[in-house]
Length: 401
Ligand SMILES: [Ca+2]
Ligand SMILES: [Ca+2]
Image 1 (cartoon, rainbow, N blue to C red):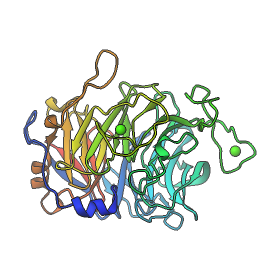
Image 2: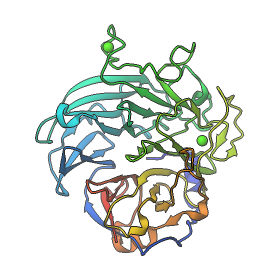
Image 3: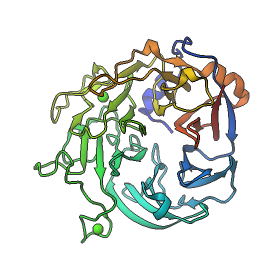
Image 4: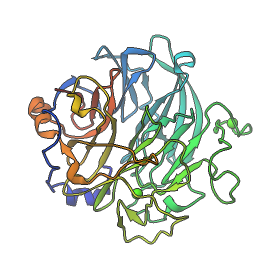
């Protein structure tokens, strides 16, 4: 799976480079939790059972781990439905805020012809071994390009489902979709999965929160919460502040991390006029200004496909790592951490790429033949420790001291 333009990837894949190896605390190592998965893209723990975790396989299976042991029978197999061209596939999953009682799980995948982006609710059985009763929530037609389909979906602290979409692909957002108000591409969307504002449409079963920032604005899809994303493949909600930590994959030169405090919609993150902190050369135009800059950018000498993670608050790694944001790069496979802090107004303080700690050397030395090859998610286990899905190796990795 290529998260940057294919031609670009081929040109730049040989570029080496690395973040500074200096940083806080002792060396971080890693161990293999599970292997033999088919393109694992996301690891999530069962919020109602700490002994269980689920792994999405890109072609369309949800796999179960019990106490770290991969189970043979998938929880769900929709490989006959999911489209896997290019970056398409089974890309995201989120548990309902009331999962413990309603057992609702939401999946994000590509399917259909023409290809759609679909968000579908399933119901998990009590044992955590099966997802059934597929129920469509929200869908929209994709472009004919096969890249930039977004990925992660998460419920916000407000209980609403947040969706971040890619620009639809093709390189440099040739149709300026990320700034087009009646397009779902290149946006942050916010919907209510507990109501149905489309009673006459059996395929669309969600509500539009009345407090969405563009409700009632002519010509704007009211699902839109924010503008100007390129391909925010992996992002998370910080459980302490409710802020959104967004990794938006760059085009030719820069990767970026964005932060949005909880509840701050109506922002424009700048694509396609801006690539991280720089003019992209694309003319947009912007649907509105100002354009919000990222709090971190790094150039393609360091990495080419940023994979968002989360703020570490676990107990296994050295205490000096608490509060740091751990993330990865897919194309130049590396695991990084940076310091993370908020200013007095609740915005993320800017971080320079010289503050990135590259943990890959010691991680890879401990993994040997399982050295990180294609990290595509960085998520917590049930204890808040760091789990990485390696798409290329088919492995699940845990970081350890
Ligand atoms: Ca409906
Ligand atoms: Ca941006």
